[in-house]
Image (cartoon, rainbow, N blue to C red; front, side, top):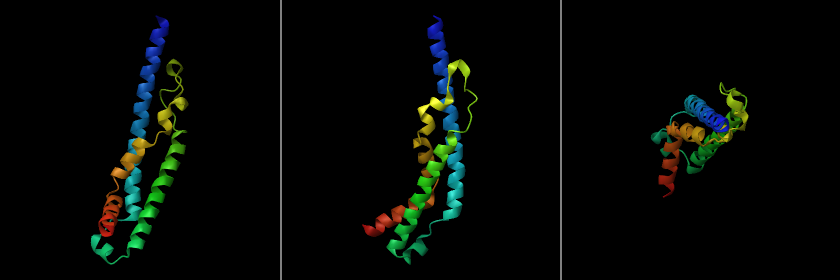
Length: 128
């Protein structure tokens, strides 16, 4: 009975830690998306009409580069953010695979970058 109880406690702590990781990823993604939007600037269709396609593609590639580097840095930083659940019921925060899973971060980070989406859609429409 004790073994089952320990396993349930361990799983509960793991679920709480995954929620903690998800919360941190979400907060960081929103903050960094705001910063990236500020750095990259808003997409203006009027300016884009006078901009050559290759330059629009270049700006998009640079934006993708920023996204990739940001995801890499956040993934590496997350390893060092301590968890309040570490050590409870034998739980090791560093062993949670969701710690290195960037899907949630990347999705939210991209979702809050309207200029990136608008630029890609404009390029797509221009090339169609």
